[in-house]
Length: 530
Image 1 (cartoon, helix red, strand yellow):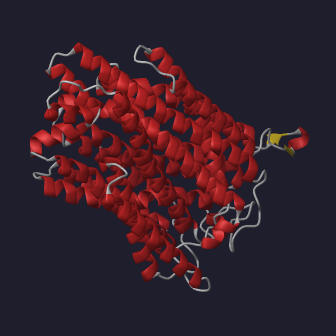
Image 2: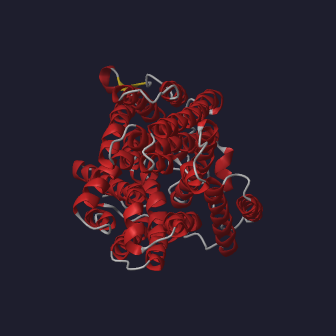
Image 3: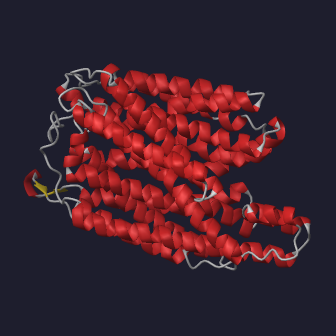
């Protein structure tokens, strides 16, 4: 490729990273805007839950079919359409005048996001050679996690200066830039065989992922004793079992996903380990904003600022991971082996993450901002070391033929992992919070409000002017948060052990049928080099 073409590929990737960033921002700023939306649209608690759930459920249902559509009709085309859908639905969300309208437009927003996630990953095996993918994956992964500290900063500013709809309207300029960049810079790529549409597979996968996601959302809201939640989770597992059985029968036809990918250790463990890291980190992202705002007493913008050390650590980790895993220049232009293998870097990253989270797990009410910044930065460093290696291990096995459906499978597992993480770790936090809560003497209504969460507890303490209750609520929340962080650290430590045992040191050149050759990109193979 020419230098100009090489630059265009990286600019195209930056545009796609911006698309992923705006999807992440939408999730974080919505949570910030919910109290304001509740007042303006007279939304009930159930409505507020559906503002988030409608998006998550549609995303879960559409993510695997979106990958197949990219392989069949063109990844650039599907990405452009999904960006357009996301931009238009963002505008519709901004100007919704009722709860029903906002729920419906949030669902449409989920359709756009469902294609953006896998399409942004699917072009990496197509555009970039194996030695370039480390940097490409690091850039894409950083866009996902940047949204967590940036969301409160942007959302807090917008809510302070504009109306609540501005938190959705901010998506549009970024989407417009991404549309132009993808249109002019990204080459079209698709499967040469144009895979058929597996109708039953689409129905089963969509139904199964939707039921599983909804069940875990309900369990997170109502507790694990909720029979509806457990029944829905069971139904989702059963339907996904039927889906896998159906896909195996289509081994000689055109299945929705290539189950043969799981025969490759790097795909299986790369995908599983990146799902586990998402599971563990989402617990931290769920708890820390509440800790900063309700225990330390800062506003949403201050909460975002206090999460920035994670980004600093993550950037250092990703740069180090990329350099350590890349071949080194030797004498006479020869290439020398990298300084570290993927499994060593993943294990080291997970271990550092576990250590950082363990320091966070001994947080006290009196712990200061500096202490939080230290362990959050260490956790980010571990994340930066581990995540690009896991993603590269999984994506390195994908062929140019089915990179869309393969990337959708990776994205679907990470999405489900995030949902399960919030539900399971949120329940652990809530249980610990309840264990230390002392509500003796409070009227039942106020006690129920305090029991609902730390925000409710702080609100009751302030309304009743009870310093003792305020202290008890904060101590109880920090106790629950510490238990949750111990669980997250345990997940990270187990992941380090799994990486050492199961991840292969060297990427297998032989992959599934049609796998990308180590010496050329999928664009070049298809005759679409820029």
